[in-house]
Image 1 (tube, rainbow, N blue to C red):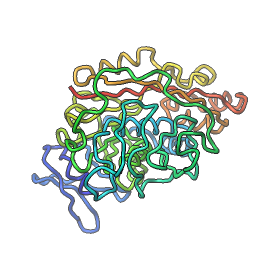
Image 2: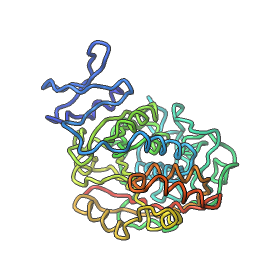
Image 3: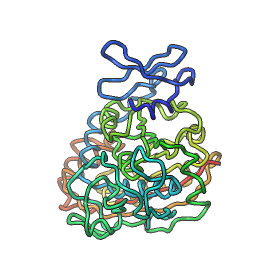
Image 4: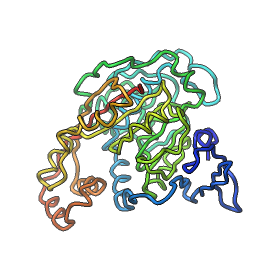
Length: 383
């Protein structure tokens, strides 16, 4: 595993530092007290001390999510996260790996998602999920000459105009709510040469990969309790690693070691998030808005978004974080019936809907199926 990431990890049993060691043909992470944690052949390390309370997403759910995300439908979310991370760490030097200092001529980042600047140079090792970005107009935030979603689209797309596959507008519909400085002075140097981006409940790691593509000096760690998800997350980006961990327990990370913490549709452990986040770091939380996938909820009998969701999120973080900004991102998705089935299959409704009934209801929908993507992106600073 990347030593820049291993150096931030801590033993889940005794909280001592970990180092990588060979055990025959296998690899493991060990602490000074001889606790050992195997690195699976698929690339992730098991840092779960004891049994997990649940197994997380099944292989079928993870496969559905991978297919749906690979089609680009949630790229606006990835782009918004990447732009927010870039803005939050705007004082950090954005340079080629191995260099020390800011990229020549790179302007300072702002705190708004809608106008994230073209800053720095793209990382050559960033993944290329597709030939042309499928992000809707306005969601294609760029770094240098490339979209932060990970594609290499240039030209008109690179300055924010729609590429050949763009479907329609997808911009924050509510302005950022001021609550603190978007870019604290000195953030870059305070966070060190290799800022660590952690995705708690990372799934396949696609959002983490997009953020790493926007921050070429950063390394990333995907945390999840689902082994099928981690097998994919471990390969999501060359500068990322993956670890099996329960985010409701103590996180296997050093105090103050994380620069950017992502939480996308995942549980929020406010106390642990605060412990591992650097005082100059940022927590980015994505939750569904009330009208997220609204067209499918009644038609297919899916689980509804809790109308008190925003209040519950704020309450879970209030003792440890101050909200610096919030934006709502909306986009219109045009889906085929198989894509609708994939979308349902990757979420919690997959466990609560009779497959035969669901299939019949999806078959009755006229194609293309118009669906609203609506999420809240909260930007939080540690207290």
